[in-house]
Amino acid sequence: MEKGTKTTEKKGAAGEPRMKRRLPRVERRRERARKRILEIATERFVDVGLDRVRLEDVADEADISRATLYSHFASKEEILREVIRPVLEELIKAMKEKKAGTAQQGLDNLIEVYTAMWDENGDALTLALRYILHDPGDLAELVSKIQSQTDSVLRPLNSDGLLRMKTDLARNAFIQTAIVLLDVLKNESNREALFRESIRALVLKKG
Image (cartoon, rainbow, N blue to C red; front, side, top):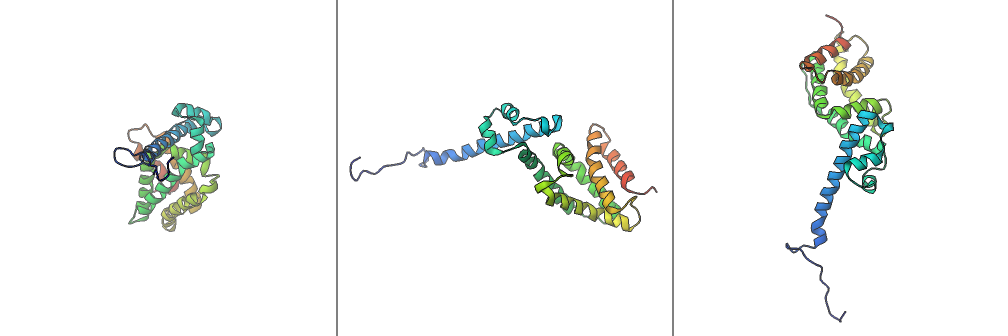
C-alpha cells in the first residue's frame, strides 16, 4: 500500500457500513429462531413430557442447526424456565391489578384472571404445574409471589368464615386444581361458569 493511501470501508446505499446495516437483520433472524424453539419445545414438553424430548429433534423441527439451538439455550430445563417465567410474571401482574370490593368478589376476580391466563398461555401453565410449582428452583421467588397474592384473596374469606379449610390449604388446592380444571373444561361451551362453580365448591363452605 502506498504511503498516505487511506483505506475506506465499503458502504451501502445509505452510506452506512454494510456489516452495520446487516446486524438488525441478523438479530431478527435470531429472535425468530428463538421464538420457534420455544414454541416447538413447549408443544413437545406438553405432549410427551420433558424427559422424552430431545433438543436435536426440536432443532430439526425448527429447521435450524443444533449449534444455533445451543447458542440460545444450553438445556431443556433452561427452555422450560424461559417458557414459564414470563407467564408467571404476567399472572402476578394480573392478580395485583384486580381490585375487589368484597371477599367473594376477590375470589371471582381470581377465577377470571386464571381463565384469561389459560386462554393465552394454557400450555405454559400446564408445564408450571407439572414441573415448577413443586420444585421451583430459580423461579421460587415468582412462585412465592403467586402464593402470597392468592393468600391475600383467600384470607378475607377465611376471616368471614367462608372457607372450607385453612388459608394455606385452600391456596394450594386452588392453584393445583384450577389449572387441571381449565384443561378438563377447555372444550365445554359453558366452561367459565363450570370453572367458577367448581372452584367455589372446592374452597367455600356450602350455603
